[in-house]
Amino acid sequence: MVYALICDLPSKWEKKIVGAMNVTLLPGGVCAEISGVNLCRPLIDNVFSKIYKAWLGTGALLIRGQCLTDKQLLTFAKQFGDLEFPPSKLLSLMNSDSSSDKIPSHINVISNVVENGRPIGQLGAGEASWHTDSAFVEEPPAASILYAIEIPSKGGNTTLANMTKAWDSLDPVLRAAIRGKKAKHDYTYTSVGERRKDFPEVLDPREAPGPAHPIVRTHPDTGRESLYLGRRLNCYILGLSLNESEKLLDQLWKHAVKPEFTYEHVWQVGDVLMWDNRCTMHRREAFDKSERRIMHRAQVKGERPYFEVE
Ligand code: SIN
Image (tube, rainbow, N blue to C red; front, side):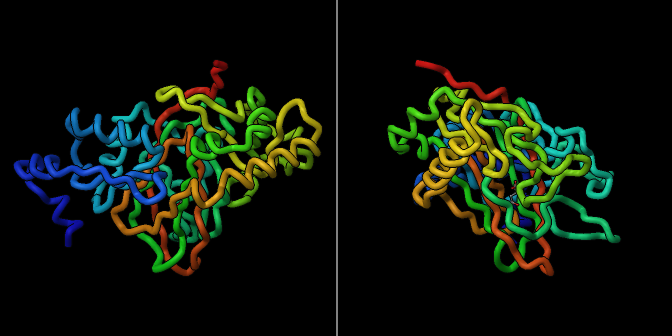
């Protein structure tokens, strides 16, 4: 199997693999595929700098055919910055029903698998609606890195949407309406619509718990502006009436997830898909709950979103 071969390569072969590294922009320009790299070992500087450049340039990377332990996944992630905890831990809500002592705490298990009557991970088999990871904390992660260990025979595709492209092509009237404005990001519900333990139901988005972030944010590394919408449920634009906020958000969302800003990923075991959370949203389609899907995710720390006025 190609998969095992890549893992078992002696280090003398590594150089050859690195030498063959390729960066290919996938159709739509939302994700770049990196081939010819073995993430089992730390990447040498010039290889990493090419990968980093491709990541900043597109906002998302696909690296297929990997065979990683959690430690190797975290080592890869660490090259992009300090590791961040999974959302539940970020919210100090470590849920003993869905965590396992065997998993390093920076690894977020995304899975529908139930073992001994307990879910081994988060998000089940339902649709995860469009969102930016952990926009509901003051300093949301900069990067999310998702590694496929088991996948269902169909469904469970993950689609990314590039928010820089969405902002660049937004109607000037809408751009003027949101420039400099902030939106509140509710942390009560997960992306599959489940209410987090211990948080009361939200009856009015204006009262929802969570930080406010600029709706247009400046990327700290590229200086480019992107829409930053978090998630639709219970979002609220500060300073507007609830009706005005809902109307404006509906217009923004309609634009933000147009197919021309998206890349739909059909998973293979061994895929690593990573996205820049500062300028990319994503959703996961539902899949048959009788099938197994196990993904391990690492996250890299980010900064408080800001909008730099020219
Ligand atoms: C997520 O929403 O972060 C999970 C995406 C996926 O399961 O593909």
